Image 1 (cartoon, rainbow, N blue to C red):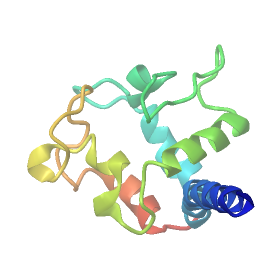
Image 2 (cartoon, rainbow, N blue to C red):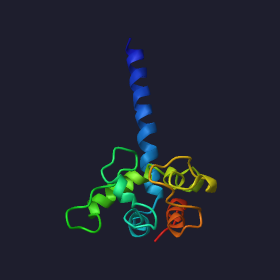
Image 3 (cartoon, rainbow, N blue to C red):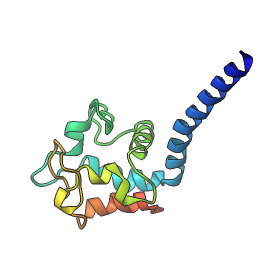
Image 4 (cartoon, rainbow, N blue to C red):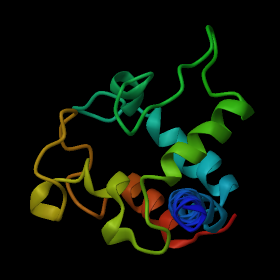
Length: 143
């Protein structure tokens, strides 16, 4: 009986480690300063013919959930940016642009993106400067 209990505990610890360690490792490989200075502003940027990412994703219930801006603020606090960094880091595969949901979901399907994004095609192709900025961060750009 004790052997089964130990085995069950060991399996639970292994499962928890498998879930937690990859998220921490992802964030460790991504540069926070690059995220804050080059990526995060894209989420607030007005793009011709599109809603800002913030308009749909502020406080949303999906995987890409942006922090709501404090009243009268034009950018997030340091604490909010840190939380967003953690959340967004979970949506990318550091070093692998082609496997990063943050880049594929809003990219037009004809450019290699996903078939559906309720916010429209934020990026028509991979030559978009904002798409390139996010891709550079995912690829390991340092400040």
